[in-house]
Length: 213
Ligand code: ATP
Image (cartoon, rainbow, N blue to C red; front, side, top):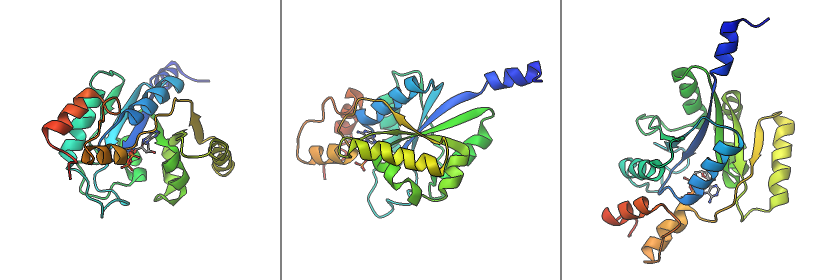
């Protein structure tokens, strides 16, 4: 039989969403899936964790981590459920998701982790380093992105769940077809990014002349 103390510790478990990304820059698509994950899966908080040294993107120029963090900070300021976590930025190691999740589990007691990602990342998931360890420490909440076929997306989740039972869940969220790459391209082409990123992020990009070339 559970003691009162055990009951209390079960109740105190915090459900934490993890929104990892390069955020170069953060845009409304990221915010939209984070907010819908929070609502749909009753998360107590969503942590935005900008990538430090990415294993996949080391050759691509990534805007200074300070700028990426500042833009995340500005973008989430009006949502009390959202928080910035600089664990990957502050580390000199390559940012591997499995390691980040292990560290979070060590640093915070009583947390259950839900890793939030878009369908493009879901399709790559098994090529990430140590997917088994990622799944030992988290469940995956995946958002459909429009350029993928929807049936293929749900089938993929079903197949992954056969292999890793009850680890993958679809997100029911409006899809906003925007990517950081598109934002960067639009800025270079002197096109508008209004309504694709929060106003404060747009002002920051303009002020610091980010992505102009
Ligand atoms: P880039 O265009 O530079 O590749 P991105 O827009 O995909 O970047 P990332 O920071 O790499 O942004 O993405 C972080 C996570 O957010 C990934 O899991 C990605 O799939 C997801 N994501 C990004 N944009 C969207 C979107 N519009 N809808 C759903 N998920 C998204």
